[in-house]
Image (cartoon, rainbow, N blue to C red; front, side, top):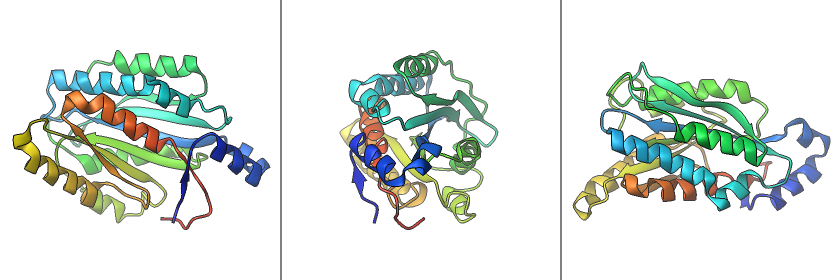
Length: 239
């Protein structure tokens, strides 16, 4: 079982243990953030999603985890997705090595205007697109997709079918499930969370986290990023 340690000190211990090999792979985490822009997400909710992600990345605790001083950087890419014909890159891969680079990525995300080419929810197709992005980050120790969504896959290949292909054998998929904020929607929110836990997340350390409506998106994303930015101890079995 993989054990998770706090960032910084654990990263230093890994460097000391692996010696020169660690410096050959200076990217500790390749993180892809996938934002849902399907038909269930209106313009106001999309703005909350984009601004919420920007705010989460700009939070002092998240910034400290990204720029932890270990010399092992985080690479970030962000895209929006909806139906099978729509995956649009908002932030191409960038190595978050300084405050200035992180500030530029946050500004780019916050300033993005939605580009939507479909109303359906093709989550499996979206995840396949995420897998293709990792080809440019083959040297990163950990590869994680962070998919946000407020509905179930309803067109194209399903996440489960995609995972059976082996394309995600070394990729973790986590989920930020956006449920309704009202008490009357508790049952639907539980059902959606259960779907993401059983059909979407992937990998031995994967998890799903709930956002209680788009008003809660920024705080939920902050908590989720802090968890994902922890550095794992290597040596455990593969997926």
